[in-house]
Image (cartoon, rainbow, N blue to C red; front, side, top):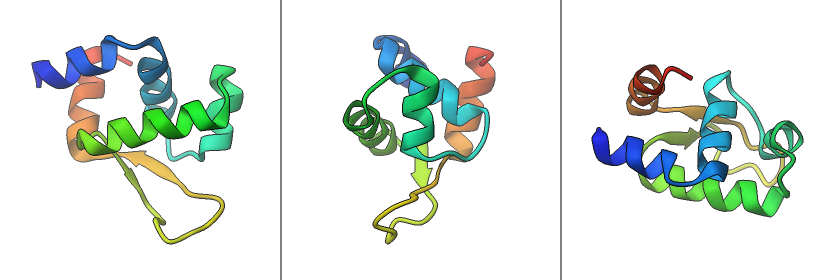
Length: 83
């Protein structure tokens, strides 16, 4: 768990993306608006978070409108971070 917290907190962008998803199921375009990031940066950070088992894409096969949510592990980390 400590490695996951360190991984998130070591990047402001990852922290912002993780925090945005922690507020509820969301799409990359919505995260981009909330965080003032480009969608491609959001997507790269989502991929990193997904590879660490923190987020999941709920409709992986969709070409547009992909929804992301925290995994159970991500929820535990969110509680530990207090976000």
